[in-house]
Image 1 (cartoon, helix red, strand yellow):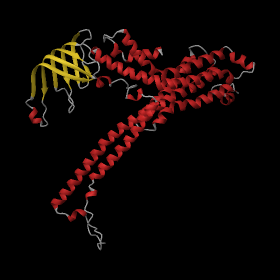
Image 2: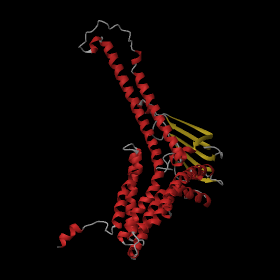
Image 3: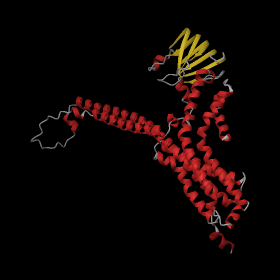
Image 4: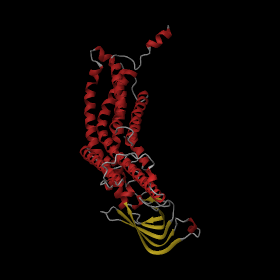
Length: 445
């Protein structure tokens, strides 16, 4: 846990270092960050400790002494097996209750830090991206760092990329109410400059622009934007990490219903665009059994042909745009749904991972006959990295819909299950990890 906490502090060092945070706030930050590490820490700990303990037994011939008195390997593992099953059950309840609590408090702590300590949002002497603005300040003052001096802001546009709007002011002040999600930035005595870009490039030759002077200028920054950037590229990709099983089941059911409704809306939209329902179906077709074999456009005049073709092209293009736009929307919603399904199954996977990795580590320790922190550490880390990377690749692919999110959650554990059965069988029968006698004996002869 200590190693992973250090890795987490290193990950968020830019958030914590030089931000005028007191020790209690930093301690809370780490405390709320720790629960999400349990799915990494506990399986690795179980694997490493089981290899070390049983390797130590085998190295000191404890198993030989046990077997001489009629105690089998299964009987030697029985009490630890009961403990590991209890640990797995405890991990399940931990994942269902404590990890969502930690995620929820971690998110809200960062949001509250941004409100009561603006230093977390804006650092001196560098550009800080907050929502749709990039802000740089020369210095800050005040007990909460709320008074800014030498403010430069580049405001991004939602319609085009590039830096077209610049605001410079002598002073500024950060304001926020305790119960508000909006951080207010008031600028004092400054200048405003904006380039005006016209679609007609000929009109841009003279570099048209607008500029003005202001005494007061107020920005409102949404703190949801401030806190939603890196909370979970690895951990925060949404609020699914803050939900327990009952909440996840409810959300998954709602998302499935919403997806069906979206499909129905799209199908109705495309059907209505065909104007099939508005066609004149009152034509008298009785006695007209002849079939026209010519080109259908030949029935129209040249001007009507152009109108028909243009109408068909416009209709096809607009329909394609609707489908493309909805495709991206459906893909993002499918990823969001898959993340909730993976989060649901991860709570069960943690419990089973502890049990399976114990039955990998214990017999492996008995087979390699090495205790301590040398070879067991190397083997445990290699096995855990294999298990962990299988899980990461499977979940990333499952999120994007390459295969079922249920398979993505369980794949790494399923890969370790045959290995645990194989090693337990080999250790029970006093055989090595691999049997090469059939190959080596003829070569020796």
